[in-house]
Length: 544
Image (tube, helix red, strand yellow):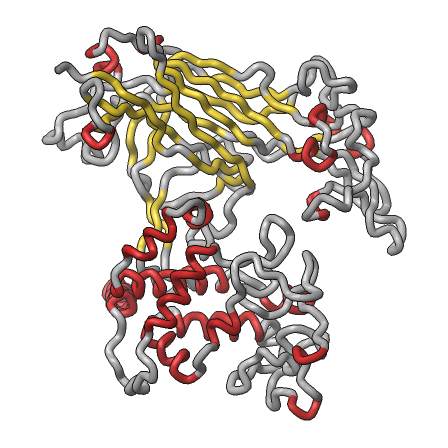
């Protein structure tokens, strides 16, 4: 029986674009392990095959010589590509027997279809103010969505207006806020595998139908009042961007107590300390979410696929891996995470734990713990506060003296002391945290810590979404991760599946374990890092 196109999908289905003022998009890069000894992280960003868009809309693969993140003072935007794929199979066959292939003009012709049968609809929206004020009239986006055919290879702007029918449009008629642009790439013939002029043959398929989203430049917009400079503040927006209607319901409004986190409002600087909820300045930005709908017009049964693009600020630590990623958050949905945890072998679970602590260290390496401890440490009371006579002796006196992570914090390990703050070492707590986490990213060192301090991880690492008494969006205890916030303003935590997997590993350790011997063998990951660093040092010496 002849095969047919059973379904279409987009790869990747979700992507994060990042704002940037440069006109040149960011080249592709990958994380490689390990990093060189001049890096605080375990990984560094290495160049990878990037696609240059030609004047006719086709793409040419290129391997950059380095990773360049900005052009002068302007940051390069992250502008992701998306490929359209199809699942091919016989009518009535189960999906397990379908074959996934990229959609190309040749594939469409095989099924008597032209490129015009494939259409893309882009619906870009910024609903942050609408959410804050619970007013749909304060949303702005593409009305109607921008529709592009696969045989149209021009650049299409995503220009935002207020919703049709808004009682008082925030964006006046005749004005728009640019939210970026989209372009469907022109397909090229894929070179043969033995073509030496195309070393990227097995990595990039230039014949696949793909589209690109390029985000806006990271500008702010507001009412005319937001462009005024006062004695207390600089102008919030440029005059050219100060065209929003102040009577639309955003300017001058105050934060609603039911909405968290409350500091996501764009507020005026309060005139007095008594005004804890100052009025809004009425400013918006050019971030957005783009919902992409792809339709393949098969006779009698159109096929539909979706993709989502989230636009955020630049990544100021692009060579550092977060300990809690978007993939981790998505993996926390449904029963799939529990099944994955159960299917892990002992070796796989241990490798995952080591990788988690490596990523935790990379996060800590960028974190000014001294600043956040001083500003966000909760005032200790009750059994959280050690009596003065029991305060950790020989410890650098952090301030405020009765707050989280000082020498009177009952959670502090009494064997670990932080040196005092000096001109030569202005951030002793940050330096200590990096040193400590750098040591326990090796699985054997972590096991030794647990031997010496049974139950320490269970005591320090807070459960998913756990909030202790008196904690809020401003202050927390030193429970891990300390002083970091989730999107709901409460303390940041591991995802549920991460926490469960980590605790399963902890409880699976033999008890009691023998103390690690001095000079015990390094873990495979630590050995690879050591060997690579030694090789790097040898190369530097040779080059001299």
